[in-house]
Image (cartoon, rainbow, N blue to C red; front, side, top):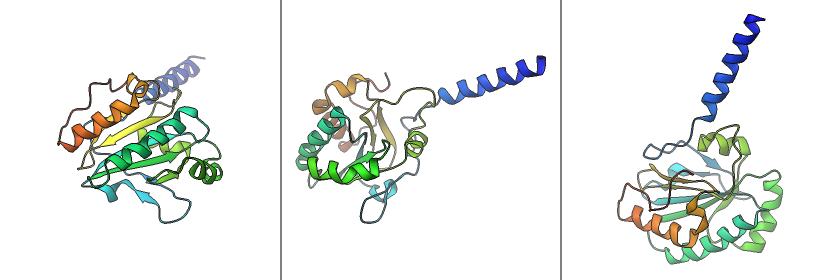
Length: 184
């Protein structure tokens, strides 16, 4: 019985340690690959020298669909600047749902898919915490994580303003993120 309690306590401690991790702002972005329906996979490392905004989405989520529409507008505004917007769907069946999503929302930036496990691993997201979408990550021109915004964060209540602020700050070479809270 005592050994069983120790094992349970150890297991519980390990699980708690896993839930305490999160993507570290100011650290290099981990390697990450987004699969495309056609064409080669997208490697984040191929965008060094550009500010990168990644939207992690669910193809069925109305908030994600609205963000995709907004990112279309922002992508046009930043055409010709060193900015790359990416979308990564990771809901169950995203590979099958993506053609209809792309046809309906016509993103003018690359949108691909990954498994939920790959996204959670990239985001270093707590295993036991729900991941609300859309979730956005911003990388500076050197590939450093400069913003990690949860779907339920203040940042996502006004993405029309906050995404632009974040991009502008990063284009200026800023190392801090916009006034919106990082993690909430």
